[in-house]
Amino acid sequence: MRPPKKKAAALGSAGVFVTATLIAGAVAAPSASADTRHGQDREARGTAIAAARAAKAGINWQDCPADWGLEKPIQCGWVTVPLDYAKPNGKQIKLAVDRIGNTGTKAERQGALIYNPGGPGGSGLRFPRRVTTKAPLWVNTAKAYDFVGFDPRGVGHSAPISCADPQEFVKAPKLDPVPDSEADKLAQRKLAAEYAAGCAERSGEMLPHMTTPNTARDLDVIRAALGEKKLNFLGVSYGTYVAAVYGTLFPTHVRRMVADSVVNPSREKIWYQANLDQDVAFEMRWKDWQDWVAKNDATYHLGDTRVEVQAQWLKLRATAKKNPIGGVVGPAELVGFFQSAPYYDSAWAPTAQVWSKYVAGDTQALVDAAAPDLSDTAGNAASENGNAVYTAVECTDAKWPTSWKKWDRDNTELHKKYPFMTWANAWLNLPCATWPAKQQTPLNVKTGKGLPPVLIVQATRDAATPYEGAVELHKRFKGSRLITEKNAGSHGVTGLANPCINERVDTYLLTGKVDAADVTCAPHATPTP
Image (cartoon, rainbow, N blue to C red; front, side, top):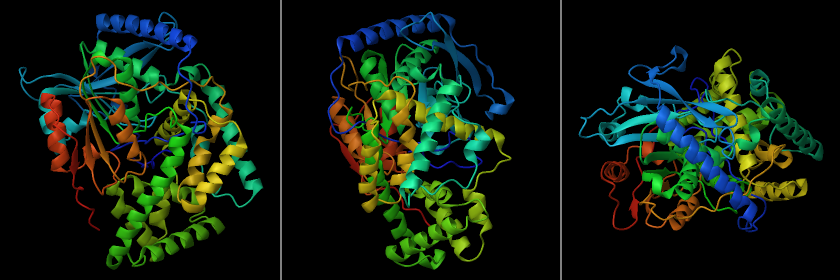
């Protein structure tokens, strides 16, 4: 399930596209067959060949293209990788990378810190801007590291894929995600199948290779191109699954690794079941936000109990269903806008503000916030591309149920108790049921020999990546440390001011040291209205 799209912001703002999550039933995936292992051996050899080539070539750093929105002294370049690692001498694609040098002395420098903000489908190119904008939480780390971002394969400037015409993709209003009838379900199924076919038509050559293991291999080639012996990596949201897979495939190549807001790496969860788990967590965090809105009724006038706030929500939804607000904002657009509140605490006040204005008679604020801007062709292309990559990676990474009966039963059941996100998430992922490319078996994430301590950071009430994911990765990566932010639920914890967490992340990145035991931190400050 994707996070909300901020209209003006291209992909790559704070926590970027969070992961959706799903796998066929709760049956354990079979262990890798000899055939799969043989494929992995060929891919391992292909990665070594590509990495050696990249180490020799290096990166030709130059000023970034003007329209990338990356100011000097950030520099940009390209790293060449094979489309298919089993055929390292076959078709190659270019990945866009950028960097800013460490702000400290030569003696303080510890190499490059590479970042992935999530998705699948998020761009990491804005990461070096944490230095140019003097982001206070990153000042210490920036002294020691060059900050390096990249567009993963298929994303942005890196051989971008597409599944639909971007202007058509953003058009509104869309169908109400909550079906009233079998006819509604049939219409959504048809749209999902058409979308999957569009991916094959527009990006067919790329689809079989749009996987998390390939992104992890790309990361290893980028490491080599940077001249780094070992990888320092910060992965947020889906970036934690990239971290989990990288740590499994290349344990001896890891130096420091931070996994923030963790996708559950269990094979049984990737990706079908994880999305269902997400629906449950979203409902919990949606209620947390409604409680906060009710507590601040003096500011927002939306009701002083959660029940009243929910009644206002249902009223808004019903109004938009009957007559889309401004002709463009229906229930689907409302969910798209309002889901930012359960995602990020930073969206609590702005979302409530827009809603409050609407109730007071100002509909324009809601239209501006929730409707697509058809004049923003670059932003719309980025949204469509992000969604295409999200779909391609999740659908290709794992086997998905092909039986509509199963989807229908699971989502109908979940919707009864967790209505906020369930059907919207189901339709987003349904293209995976008719996916045109061969679906893989997820990697068994585990501790390989030589893996150093990995730092895991997670809030207990995270909607997008439920807390159990962090516990699961912690169990699988021996020697890892888990920092839990208790009674908090913002997605992307390392970007929030909480000294209990910030100081430990700094210490780990600067010294490699972790606490002797797991740590529980009090929550960061609750947003003020």
